[in-house]
Image (tube, rainbow, N blue to C red; front, side, top):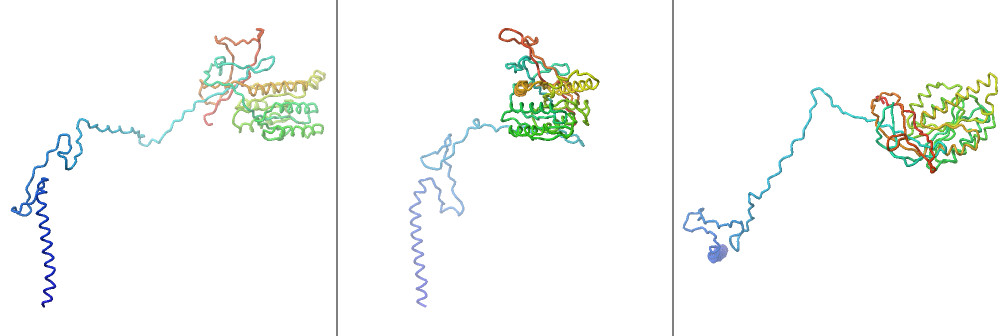
Length: 413
């Protein structure tokens, strides 16, 4: 029992010493707390009650009141506070009437592009340096305001449509010489195709930039020119219609170099139908070259009823070839000798590559599918017809090459 009491007595002494050290430390630190304005609990007051001390005064600026203590954030002057931005107005909304569907409005303003070639009548050279003010465009007799103007000189996309039938050896040789002369004026960026026709059409070469491929096709035809051809019929109307169909799938300006006698024998289309198709064609210009000119010149007026009928047939064929070219703004050629071909091809090349492009919005904006006649004239600064002179002040005649008209779009297109 004595040992048990001793064991419990030792902890009691340790506890007393710890309490004495804590009390001494608290008594020594009490004056320091009072010096700093801290409140201590009065031993005479009941537990849980504290003496209220006044709060330290804060300067007007909001800074600290002494060298030590908590740092206060400066107060903002109410007059310096920027008022918040007003809220954005609500977005206006539109509500369809009850039962009405959504409707979108699309306005299509048609534009017409007219390519005009200005060539001197004597030398067939292009006339440069013209300004927009020198041009007047009339649609169905009403003057139009030109909105766009530029001179164009670009690569060409052309189809050589050549007659190759048993009409006669002279006609085939003229066609081959004309086709070969045209290939000499081609450039590396040009796209050319070749198609022949008699009773049917035959594709010699599809569109290519390889001039030699076209020339190889011409050489192949030259080897067959002395052999009997399969058909003597020449369906130029059907062949031209097929050529227009093929070119209509290609974007941009296109050309048809029609090299033929112009005589049509068994086409399904009539002359009126093919003329309607030529008028309705868009961005396609036809240059026509007649074959057999020398033979017809030598045998014209040979006499007899058959001779007179033959002359009438070829005269009508010439008028048809000329009409195809005029309706589309092209040119017609009737060479008699092979020596004329280089100059004729140079004129075609000059006319194709160098033109003035005029753009206007027609005053008649109706899309009714009607045919609109076009007329272009050149004027000077005072509005009078333009007169040209050479270095010796001699008058120069010129020709304007452009489409006869165009067919407006239908609303359903």
